[in-house]
Image 1 (cartoon, rainbow, N blue to C red):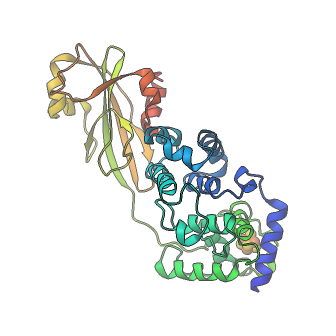
Image 2 (cartoon, protein in one colour):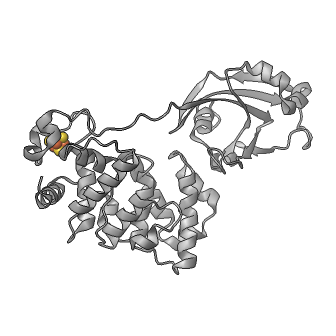
Image 3 (cartoon, rainbow, N blue to C red):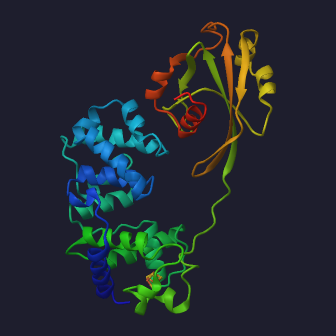
Length: 353
Ligand code: SF4
């Protein structure tokens, strides 16, 4: 298909079909950046309330940089992959320090900031800075693979190069931001993964997938390895109306979020057995009683599947700090702590929040 025909058609389609979204009404790179980071985590409909919360709480980069990390994590709660929220905060601080609080809109500056990869840098630079750099996200891969009949796997090095090079040839140099948003929107609404709307498509006459009936098999993706399964046993240690919690500090998932006392196992294990064997819990044995044990919760992350049970135990008295070095929090304090969604689900299910 001819390059100019493709970009002209895509932009025409966008102007007639685009969704009205708040970040499309601004050229402020700070707000565009916020929306892009949120949308890496979730769909537009679910991301919208988060975007509103963030811009209301942090109308500019100075406000975000001055916030505590805990507050940022709390607002982010529910989106998952909390490294993104921590990078968001670190990036805002760096922009205040290194760029005097003026959020950059040039690709070569953006790409150096924490949490900003090639895709996000291209999106901000093209929309806010009108720089002709093409975005290549899942939607762009799909549209290009189908229209141009490309069978190179999109998650291979060769595929990334090929798609990126084609995307940069196709970009509309007069309005690169509009073009980038147009192709992503076209992929999100029209050339969708299942049942693309080929019968009513502006590109159908030149689309190779349509001509060869390859819509279902393009784009090609190398199958990734199986998800690792982890077995979490959370001991919800209660004393009076307070519950023991601690912030996760290690280099694992959920760094900085609060959780109950966790024992991780490599396979399913009886909670009663863990209570007898775990060093910390053994010390609590004389003063505890089991209140309830939950069914198994399943929680899926991008590379891991977690199977988790919550064991609620009640203490007759507060343990010595050396035996159980956890802080006890009231329910209202727990409400304000940043927590993994898995913990929030349990707290809601058991009427504790
Ligand atoms: S014809 Fe079908 S596969 Fe080709 S671009 Fe249009 S919707 Fe996508």
